[in-house]
Every structure is written in C-alpha cells, then in structure tokens.
Amino acid sequence: MDSAVDIQGRHLKLSNLEKVLYPAVGFTKQQVIDYYARIAPAMIPHLAGRPLTRKRYPDGVDGEPFFEKNAPMHKPEWVKTAPIWSGRNRRTINYVLADDLATLVWLANLAALELHPSLALATDITCPTEMVFDLDPGPPANIVQCCQVGLWLREIFEHFGLQSFPKTSGSKGLQIYIPLNTPATYDVTKLFAHALAQLLEHDHPDLVLSEMSKQARTGKVFVDWSQNDEHKTTIAVYSLRAREGPTVSTPVTWEEVEKALKKKDASLLVFEAARVVARFEKMGDLFEPVLELKQKLPDLRKGAVAPGAETIEIAAQADEEHPTPGRRKRAGKKGTKH
Image (cartoon, rainbow, N blue to C red):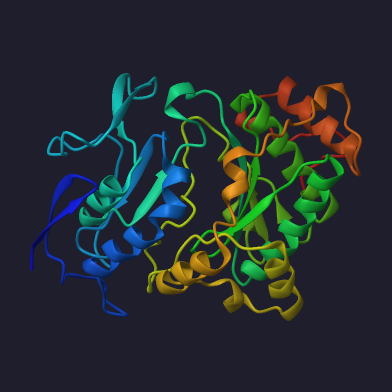
C-alpha cells in the first residue's frame, strides 16, 4: 500500500505502509510514521540544526540494519543537509538536518527507526551544547541500578550548581544530560565526564565501571563518558529503538527515577510509542530545558569544590598528563581503577 501526502507544502510519497517493522507486536511502518508525526512538535527542536546519523531497518527490527550518515542521492530537494568534513574518512559528509515535520516523515518512510544526532549544531560542530552520560548496565544489572548511579550523578551536579535531565535509552539503560548552551569544547566535556565516571567508580567500585571491560561488566553499570566526542552520537530523545516492541528513548522526571529505584521495578521506565505521545500531550516536553538552559562546567584544573573534588582533580590531571587510552586508567592515588 502506497500513499501520497502533502506536509507543510512538501509532497511526499509513502510506500509499503502495511509492512510490519516490529514483528513480535505487529507494529507497521504506517504506525512508525504516525508516531513520528505525532511526536514531531516535541522532537524536532532537539534535532533541528544537528547533523543526523540514521540507523535504518528496511527489513524490520529482526532484519539487518545499517547506519547512514550521508544524505541519500534520491532525497527530495527540500531536505536540508549540512556538509561536515570528516578527518577520519578524509571526505565531506552531507548530513541530513531534520528541521521540519516533512523531513521527519520522509526519514520514517525510509525505515530510519533510530535517529542519532550530534551533541553540537552543524553551524559550530566543535562546540557541544550539552554533555551526556550513558549509563549501560551489565546483566543481571538493569535500569534500576542505572537509576542509583544516575541519582549519584545528580547529587554531584547539584554540588556544582548544575541541573541535569534524565531519559531512558529506550533499550536497557538510562542517560543523563547536562545542558550547556555556552561556549564549550569536547576536550572539556570529555575531561569532566571521565573524571566524574572515575569518581563514581572510586566511591562505588561494586557497582560502577568507568572503562569498558566486558569481563568486569557483570552486575555493574558502565558510565560511558566517551559519548562526549565530536565523532560520536547518542540516541535522540523521543527516538524509537529497534527492540522487540516500539520502545522510545523517553524523558523522565527525577521523581520517576527515584520511584523505579525504590520499587526496584525496571518496567516503570519502559515506554512504547503510544504512551510517549500521551505523556507529551499531558506533561509537555520534559527535555525542553536542555534546549536553552545556559550552564558552564567548572574548570577542574583550577580546583573543584564538591564531595570527591580531590579525586576529580586528580582524575582530570591524569587525563591531561596521559591522554592515550592505554594510560587513561591510571588516575592517581585516589582515582585508582578497581
């Protein structure tokens, strides 16, 4: 079944609408498009102006996906793109900018289920507007343990006078965003994030890992600070995920995080498409402050006033002195890797 629609003056042909993209629950491409159209008022402000990597599932979530960075040759002429030089690939990549509803629907029609934007705007690709911590549990740990780590992170941020905002990854974990919207560099945000991850590992070695180690992952939460990088992307708020059902990376309140931890109930933080639309209609965009709230990270090299500040400073100094991955683990006496 094909269809043609006009969206805000843009003509779009939609194809294979009856195709099932989530076989376990019978969720079709038409439902995917409908979800993105309904959530667009909340989602587009978080995508607008950001180079967008798409993860496409033309054969559904059980099929073979592929990542797409370059805009496809067959894109409509009205789809905006941003040319970004890639030193790694030694070429310019023309990223799609999902700045409007028509573009979002066009992407959904391509079975781009997962949308991964840059932490920076295309106009200043080296300046992240936000910092992110991706909390990834190693079974049997789950999002409940991530809630505990997230609350510890929030406490540290509060001591620095920083507000933070949680969202589910839509998969297994929890992600914590710190809006900046002030001049920043990835060198600074990555340094800060790495230092905090090491601090948490130092204080809670039984639960927290600051470095990816598959052998040590069991029952622990990996605090992935390395997402704060010009070459990496994180799943967009409100993006679908390619799970059994159409789960969504959903903004949540800290109260919901506390409740899930208190009840030890991971299901409290699982949200599928229809429920996310209903939440937005009732609660508005919980992530709206991330767009404009202006915050500055403290300069760790000038001393930090917070619990564990000495550990943070040592970790920061170690990163500066030994920036290579192999030596990053040695964070001084107090930041020793467990």
